[in-house]
Image 1 (cartoon, rainbow, N blue to C red):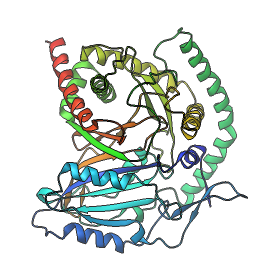
Image 2 (image 1 turned 180 degrees about the vertical axis):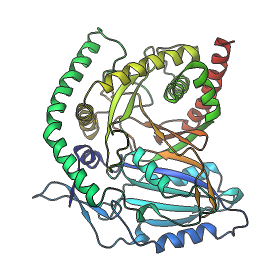
Image 3 (image 1 turned 45 degrees about the vertical axis):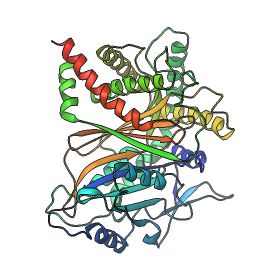
Image 4 (image 1 turned 60 degrees about the vertical axis):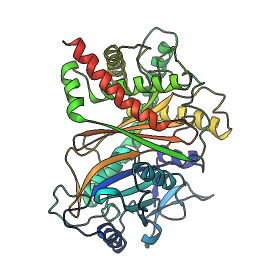
Length: 459
């Protein structure tokens, strides 16, 4: 038996048919040279034969009246309930059709009566391509952990054809390492509450100073962003998915010239794209866009399962037509936020996340999200991925797209993911958000505009 953290438990409490709490990835591959048309089908069959399922992929969530919610390991996992095969018909197999299929797979909740994960092999894409769509419950892992698990199960060379499905690899400590982790956990329980209490006090003081305008750009206040935008409201079932992408060479060129980080540049492009998108919908904000931004609370080298993240609110740039000015404004804001986060105990950030998330979740459960101000205009996270191409049985992974869940009151979630020399933007939204594909186009156009603005400023 394994207990859940408060944050992991929160994903189950918040979950509904309209707002499932799983994270996913869409991986697009190119068949190896001289491989047959049955390559993907054979891969699916070999997946079904990989029956040695390891934690956490053999765990079922247990709720009862006489015990706290906990994970229970099952001795038998029927892979036919977790691994699936799809063939896209000719003439209906382009990128738009693939995304539509992925949205159909991403919409329903995972069945809680069995382990909470699925892998779908999707064949029939043009030019010898196939795809894998894999999803798991957010209580199993956060986005960073899921990306690491995925990368660990693929090869760095096309000549390495050994198959290592993610569910066959044990994720977590064992032996003396597990005992040490248990001792560490016990010590954290003893000392964590003190750090949590002191940290919450410090964080509350910071938010108070921000509310009376004695500080600026430390951390944005929750529930004060503009409520009347197409980006926010009551989350409903049905999903749509779009992507955008730019090469890391272009990103790094701007980083070098402006001494900015990848986050600064990506958020600058998103800020410009979101403002243009909102203008299309007849909304012109006079204040900065506020995003919810997950922050990783793990120590360097820590590789535990589950979730260890906090979510804080961050203001982007005040309205401006100059992308270079926007970049500078966002860089200033993010540097201050990073300083603030580093000065507060991780336990306090986690508690803050739970408290604000609970308020938003209650509003959503009572169907008040269309009336209450949201925590932010959207959620944006950044998940670092492998720097080199990965392979499965010689098939090269061409693209790796994150597909996340929607927080309460947000109809759009954006995940940044860097992979093999490209930066991908994964946009997941409810069906009610209009023209999501256009937003992806605006992201790429905003990046080109930023390149030109930086070039002009340094000419």
